[in-house]
Length: 244
Length: 256
Image 1 (cartoon, helix red, strand yellow):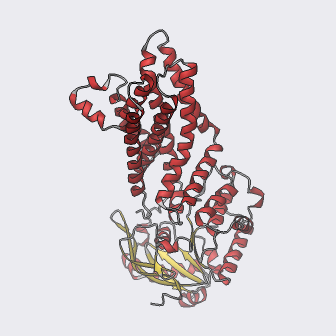
Image 2 (cartoon, chains in turn orange, red):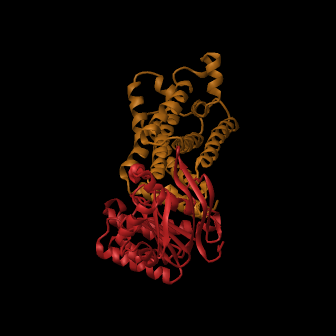
Image 3 (cartoon, rainbow over the protein chains, first blue to last red):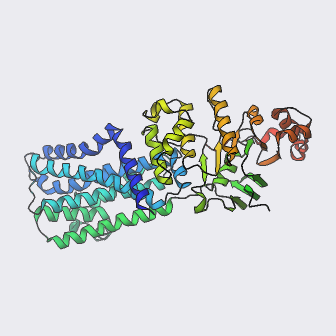
């Protein structure tokens, strides 16, 4: 691996995104719009203040998963990945370059979503807003890395979209949005402990209600980051220089 | 084996795809500093042979040695330039954007971008998005990327398909002058009339190399005066194909 090539790759991905305003719109605006919609639906109830923090984990995660998985799949299919791997580019340079580029986009996206949820939709955050932003960011990076990993196991755009329900929906269902995790049946609760999105939602709830201190939230962040690093490692193993 | 002065040496190279042998034990030695034409019908294994040389093809057995090293080894990645059949460039970057990125990956000199843009006659399109270019222009961008860093071996998979005849002549002139300056080139084509531009010809059919000779030797050997007729004569005399009496049964699809 080589920092110059990693940065060159990140810069190239950002340049591609810049030429595609629709993707930028999708990335940056859609999560805020959806959070606004949820706030509006539950306008006269207390529900938004309960599930609002979880929404901050959900939408950036899903959007990043989709965009990252499809762009890398396209790279495999158009032959540019084969070209790069016949050049002196390391597999780690490739994956880290993508993670870096989408991580930067995730910062913009999460900042906008957090700002919109608190100042426009009136979500009350008892804890630190910075900590909330940090959790949302790590969560969006997790979506990016899982998307990169999913693209390794898909041959077509159809398949990669099918990975959404397979990899993402169970995490949403078990993450504590529909039913708090401590009320889940024992087996499901244990499973949910092993899903990264659960920890993201726990952390966001903890910050929003100021129920835990910063070190505890930091621990949750480490768990999520661990999953992100794990999928980067597995993802770079699945990149093959020689293909059949 | 004369590894030091050979650009590419293959020894009993076999490649399987599914249950089928797509390269059936090919042994050859390709000298340095020449334009070597790889000719044959679609599906005969040209692309697979080229990918084996570049080191992106998983092979079943045998060896491929490129510039004295095993194909695909790290040291070769800067010394071998490869153009795949379908242009492998980013549609959503400009011509210059594509080349600037590949240049940084190769750590080639900054002036290389302008040099390869000029060599492939892309000057007036340098600021255009690749998505807005024609098919021929796109394949020139792909070729330009392979010229970055002046690699010692260029592996070009049908680089002249769909190009304007004048540009085709210019590109072949460029290949000749690159070879004169010491670069080795392996260029595939299914256009037999491009054979006359090569210093050496490999004729492939159905995973086998039927001939490996200079055009003059090939024509003399087969009593013909062009690659098309020489190819036909070779197929008729090839034991495997004449014995079966039906050489056209294995016209299977090519990769991509």
